[in-house]
Length: 182
Ligand code: AMP
Image 1 (tube, rainbow, N blue to C red):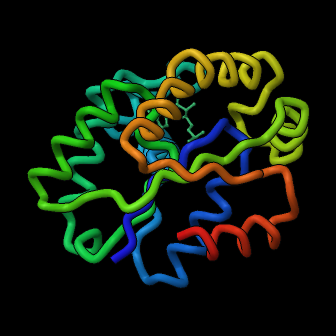
Image 2 (cartoon, rainbow, N blue to C red):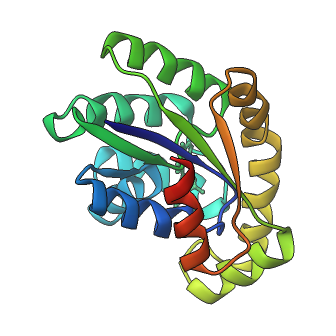
């Protein structure tokens, strides 16, 4: 059973690592950002609600992602394990996830916190060229991360779930270290 939460600023490389690890463990990689982007491009009700927030680099309202994760973790393929990438991002989401996992009779094994200095993040986000990767939006996403998501480091530290990883190394080195700590 592998149940992991990947925490870290935008551009920290957590998505790339989550994909590789989820594939090798045959469990789903659940990225709320990917799910929301798909909803936006398919113009679903969720996508229409989320788009404006995403374009501005703001978080979408908690209830939207809370409902989305409840639905996703309830699917059969998520029974044996999962990697959550980009969720939770606020204390409200983390509390809600706690309750949901209790209901599902599951628990998260580890929260992996990807540590990367700001300069490296901005550079990485520019180089991947996503729609929400314009400079002002990048800066706003970093601010939002600091204001709303950084408190989760303490949150999971207190619960003795947190492992921090130096994300400012090559992809291979991060992957090697990750496989040792989980
Ligand atoms: P990401 O690909 O994880 O960087 O997410 C892209 C965008 O989707 C974010 O900037 C938010 O607008 C939105 N988003 C993704 N995950 C969440 C979340 N857990 N809570 C609120 N908004 C989210």
